[in-house]
Amino acid sequence: DLDRTESNREIVRSFVDNILIEGQLDKLESYFDDGNYIEHNPRIGDGLPALRSALSDPVFNEGITIKYDKMHRILAEGNFVLTVSEGSVNGVHSSFFDLFRVAQGKLVEHWDTTEAVPPRNEWKNDNGKF
Image (cartoon, rainbow, N blue to C red):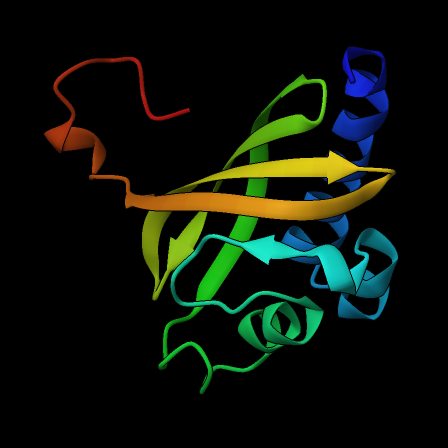
């Protein structure tokens, strides 16, 4: 669905801004068709209830605190949208790469990876993570 690239990009941009960065969980349902949400993060179950718990319940996350601060990049092609964001995991400066599959205007599948960003004095180049 290459013709949907830009609209899918905007759906994901809105989700990351509103839900992951701003924490507006009251808007969560508007981004999903719960019966079709597939999660590939092994710590989170499929479906909207599992995602809501992961985003709102520290006990669910085994005491891990994840905070998104800024989205740096968003790449899209057809139904797939990748975001590159910055934030922290338990206070450690981190990067978040989130890949979403969008279908009929809803987020239906998600993959992610998180990596700690080393202190500037440990970088082997001047390119930075973002």
